Length: 312
Ligand code: HEM
Figure (cartoon, protein in one colour):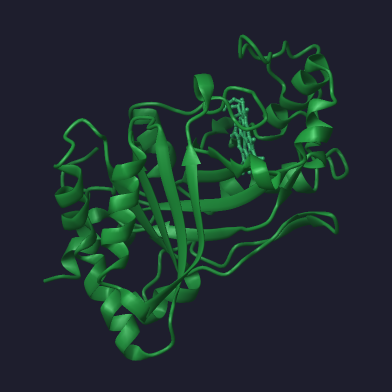
């Protein structure tokens, strides 16, 4: 990264074994907005305080803010591509938009660290925010998603991850920031498990046990991995994902919390359009026959310098 570029929040952290995803709205009233603003500058300190107690616990927190909250919190100068989550799809197969002003993406190698940080982050906010969704995710065997396939394989790494996710010269005021979409999915596991492994592999586009990509000659064009590969100006455009399985077997809840970071929401939206509408239209992602999106929100993740400056 070039000198003078603001430091991003810790988006590209090592894979952790636990995560808490919290989406909150700000309660009405100027006092509450002021409280949240002051809190923004304090988040990094709280991560340090909790994280220091377990030095190898890899605790981190990324905070994002939606279009809905931006102006009241930070004024009318907005990140160039920030807008409300755009819905895609048709009735029965829709990427739904749901409310949310603030995202907290808490990751660590131990759930106690995530839990303590979530608690310490919410304490100073009190009734200034209402947490409308909270998901505790766990890392499954071999980094496998809830549907049993290894997840995250094609993520970019190192500088490539930075280039794919961190805003640069295209929006100098918000350089060091990133866009993130979260979606909560619920799976029909009995329908999914009634497929043969070979049929599941054609849905994902990869081998289930070995995680090797299916050969182009046999990979269906409506497989998940075919529809999420996109290009711009002849070059593949990558995003950075850190999905987590979650659920309550006793209640029949089996879910995937999707989280994807990108330098522009456009790439995330293109993938969603391919999945939900299809490429071409109608050739949609078969994974959606077994997965229902029940939430969806877009946030901008300002640089850590931006958040810190709010406290000065
Ligand atoms: C039901 C929720 C989802 C599940 C269970 C899921 C699971 C997977 C799995 C198992 C893979 C293959 C391994 C890998 O490269 O990670 C994959 C790849 C991928 N997924 Fe998803 N995914 C979900 C939703 C999404 C959404 C909503 C997007 C984008 C908006 C997305 C974007 C991608 C991308 C970009 C790849 C890599 C494609 C490649 O380069 O081959 N996924 N996903």
